[in-house]
Image (tube, rainbow, N blue to C red):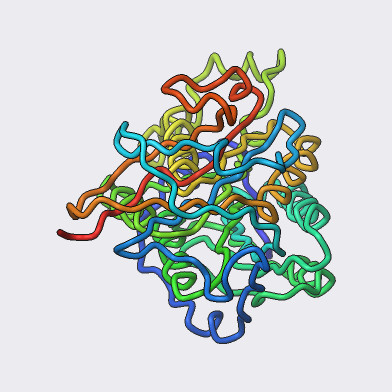
Amino acid sequence: MIRTFSKSTYFVLATSLLLVATASLCGFAARSCEAQQSNAVAQTPLQTTTELVKVDTSVIDKRGDFVGGLSQNNFRILDNGTERPIIFFAPVEAPAQVLVMIETSPAVYLIHNEHLAAAYALLDGLAADDQVALVTYDQAPRPISGFTADKSAVLAALGGVQYTIGMGDLNFYDSLSAVVDWLAPVTGKRSMVILTTGLDSSPPARWEALAGKLRGEDVVIYCVSLAGTLRGSPSKKSKAKKRAPKADADESEGAPRVDVKASFAKADEALLSVATITGGRAYFPASGNEFVSIYHEIASALRHQYVIGIAPAHDGRFHPITVDVVESSGRTANPSAKQNEYRVSARAGYMAPAP
């Protein structure tokens, strides 16, 4: 029999999770097909090498649409604060290949109807030739379907997603790390969309390991938080409830008190960091009504990019980079006013090859 939980019970469950080993995704990789190549670049995908750092860059306007028509002279890249010459540039429009990773914890089960609606909204935002693969996770990631342009097959797979009910571990960091490992050999544009609360009680070392891995990977990750509904908008009734300690455990059972606010703040920070490191974006919708516009923006960014290449340093260190959009006639230290009209997404940096 399926057990359901009150929100206070969920909070205790969702924020008192222990780390377990990550499952292998080898079988999932075997069922996946290669991404389609863009006609705007060479048939062999441009990769970061000892002689070139590839920076996939998306430029989105205030409406969430891709900004086209920019040239090499419209971009400036700062490497550790120093401008680097651009030695490769190509606008790319190609079908997206996106892996969708969905949390299936007891926390999400409480809002699974809205959760599925969010996933459906994502598929609606993608074009007919965009390829999608599906993975779920709670204690570990589980492959559901390999890359396919058949959205009806993905919808059917979504309808069969199973949620964990009862006590269980929620391992976001290690699950994401495992999926990134699987994506490493995939050619073409590599991207992920994660539908998650971002909750994970792993020790700091696990997060640091994930962040270090992402800095060295060429994968763009968009994070969509599912915690908005769980937090809820404050009403008179909910405000009254907040006078009591939030998400306390049953003292008769001797369980520790959980700081829910701190747990969600940590989750939000993790999602923002994942997106920033990889050149994606993190979204925090407060209700299901916001998903359509979010996925419109994600779909636009996935299909349209500017591929920029710079020569790397050779010191074996991590180099933070900044990508700015400037006027063609004003490539100076100060970006033009037009920069404020654009939102530029690019990876946070690169690991330089050894000397």
